[in-house]
Length: 73
Image 1 (cartoon, one colour):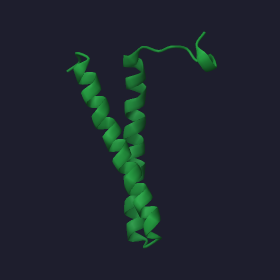
Image 2 (image 1 turned 180 degrees about the horizontal axis):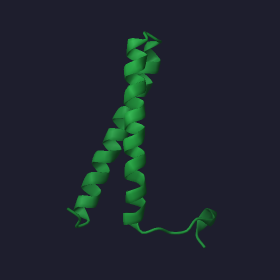
Image 3 (image 1 turned 60 degrees about the vertical axis):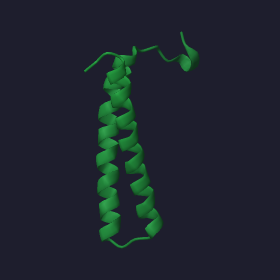
């Protein structure tokens, strides 16, 4: 048993779970960013959604290069 009662997963299995979640979050944050820009809400809300979108994109790029280095093409 590992810490916090979670089971250890192989790195590939975790990547297969993480990638669709990141893509979903990327799409949701991008739509929220567009809607907040069109709806003319507070600029900080739009900036927050934009930064969240950028963070998801950066995580997807980092994961791509991480799995590519691991031998997967």
